[in-house]
Structure formats: C-alpha cells, structure tokens
Image (cartoon, rainbow, N blue to C red; front, side, top):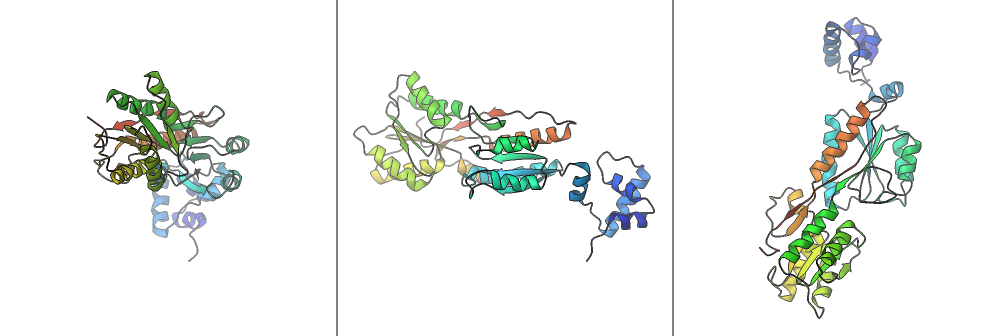
Length: 331
C-alpha cells in the first residue's frame, strides 16, 4: 500500500502543503483551527511526516549515534534500553553501531555520519582511536558514557567516580583489621586498582598483590583466587573489580574450605544481580555504580545541547558509587 503524502493531507484538509509542513514542525506558525483540521485528517489517512526528508531540509535528523564499544559488560548492555527510552522521550532516536568487530572507530562512525547524526554517544570504557577527531571534523557533538579518566580524552565523560569507591573498599578492609589484601582484575591500570593500592599505601598496609586475568568471568576469577589463596601468606581479603570475578573467588573459597567472610572477605563491583532485575539482597558485598543516573545525565546533556540554538558545549561529570556491605564482608 503506497504511503500517504503531505499533498494528499493538504487536499483533504483544504490547506496548502506548507500548512501541513508547519503543523508537524515544532514551533511552526499555524492557527489552532488549521492545526486541528490537519491533525484530524492526518490521523484519518494514517499520515506520518517523513523525518528523514525533513532532516535534509532543516539540517537536523534528530538521530543520535549510539556507538557500543564493548557490550560484554552487563551494565553497559542493560543501560542500552534506558538510553533508547530516554532519547525517545526527548523526541530523539538512537542509531546503533558496534565497534566490537573493528580495530578502530572508522567504519562504525563513518556509517553514523552518513546518516547525518546530530550527536554521538559512545558507550564503553575506552575511547577508540580517531573517534574524537572524526566527530570534531564532522562538527558532531560527542559524549563518552562509562568512560574512564584519560589525560588525552578530549570527549567529555559521564562516568562513575571509581577512584573514590575503590578507596572506600580499601578503608572497609583496613577498618576491619585485615592486613593481607589482594586484588583480582581484568584491567590492572584502572582507577579502581590504582586508587585501592594508593589507599592501602596511605594506611601503611602492604601493597596488595594483583592477579590480572584476561576476561571478567567467574572461571577466571576462580583460577586467580586459587593462585592467591594458595600462597604462603593467604589473603584475608579480596577486592575483585567485577562481580563475575568475585563469584569465581567465592567458588574458590568453597573449594578450599575457607569461610567467607571469617577467613576471607570479598568485595565485587557492579551489583550485577540488582542491575539485572534482582532484589539486590544477594550475598555478595559489592560496589553499585549509578548506571541509571549516568544514562539520564548523558541523554539530558545531549538533549540540552541539541535544543540550544548554536549548540551548548557538552561537559562531563563523575557520579558517586554506593558500597553495599552484605554477607561477604565482616560487620
């Protein structure tokens, strides 16, 4: 069945095509009577304005390129639905692209620019090479959601204050008189590990051994924990920078017959059970990043920029995390 055109609506409503266009253009100048008549005819005929065609005329497509850089992180995957939902509430639409199968940002970003996106939202921990340069070249405002600190990151970041949260975990262990502390991580250079180690050093606690793994999986966490717990000086506490690693560490403790938290305290990161729709009352002590708040903040900033004549400059923000003490930590 052929699509209903603006010309057909205009003929049926007895108005000009420009009146139909102004009716469906935000801020368009049209009388209340004409607007009501056009909208009634459009609803009867099933007419929908062609937003892509309008974008060619106005220079605005209302498309936001959402670039996924690593959807293996459950928190990032769960955030995607909220990103799409929040964009739609602002009358914006997500155009998705993935970087996972590409060595750089060129192909995915080039595809987005061909659709003339009004803004770009990168979802992932690391800014791909060339991403900022290409956005600047195309005059596309960009924001980095879940990004980590980087001296050369010229794209504003909406992320979690990982350094403050990791320091709080270290203080929890130190306050419980746990001196032999170790870490399990898939990113030894992250703020989580750096801040945790610095806090331990500031309290004159021995530098925590760091077990680096290839992936944040329960199996990798189990193997790393078995190595650490099999050492001459068994750790009294394990800080795992992902809940999946922490669950693997719990498996290792059960395998070795070590009581948690009496003999080994464990803290994870992510509150994945709660984020996935659980009741958040599981056994694992963990750090909960404010995923919803970060998504809402990022989308709100993009919406404000696109709604401001001339485009307001985007800026970043670090959101605080929550340390949830449950059954795997003392107290």
